Length: 338
Image 1 (spheres, rainbow, N blue to C red):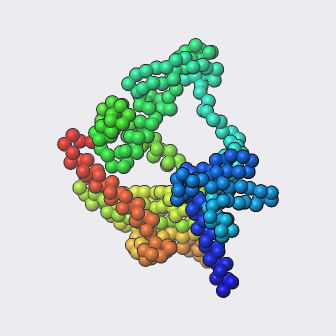
Image 2: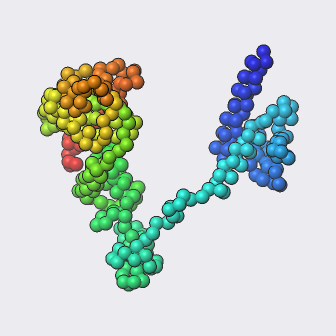
Image 3: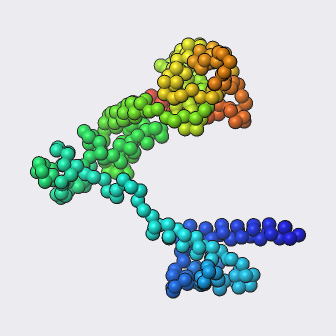
């Protein structure tokens, strides 16, 4: 009976803590009226406030009925404690070393940091701060992307909208309606091609710290109306796509090329998960060197979907690709192209 009562008390206390967090998240913050005294609004009566007090040795009290009649730490006390902890963290927060509040602006011509603000420049892109270099006396406007007319926010919006499924003409209309920026659908398409290429080049040079398990799978795609196979090899923990290739068949040489590219970017894993395709067996033995007494990498093949070592991670990626395929086919049917 005593243990059951203790469990009930713990459950009741946790419930009051949850209500206290809800009070703070809703915006009803305690108001300090004196030293160690706060007023916090009642949740049942908007015109009423309860007084929370803190005494010596961190003893708390509240004039709400829950504390006065039951002598329990009420939600108002928990809310005040929680609010004071947040306030203390914010006030004592220190910026990590090497991080500044504002980025350093350098001259676009000579690279000097000895610059000054010199009015604004207004055009179709909006209002931008203009600077003058004290060394070379030249004027310039800071740009995140060189030789790009649009604002960085516009470029990132274009990339996000395109990969969310919008056509270039719909993106053009969105930019004009929301940002007041007028760009042609051809310019938008050129931005997408340029920055997609830059991102791909950057990702190709990455060498991630991968985990001990890789997932590999293949799916059918249509390329100019012809049936082909898309192969993917992904790391379990980082979700990093180690390699990807398109082939006309599902032979051993095709799986071999996929893993060969993946091993150039990351170290050998302890486990490789695939489906029951026979082509994986020979390619696995060739790439992961399972001969001899000690076999470092193990091949897990054909597990069920609800197993921990299933290939559901890559299947989810392939479902996303299938959705993209539908969007591409619908764009091709649009009367204006793109």
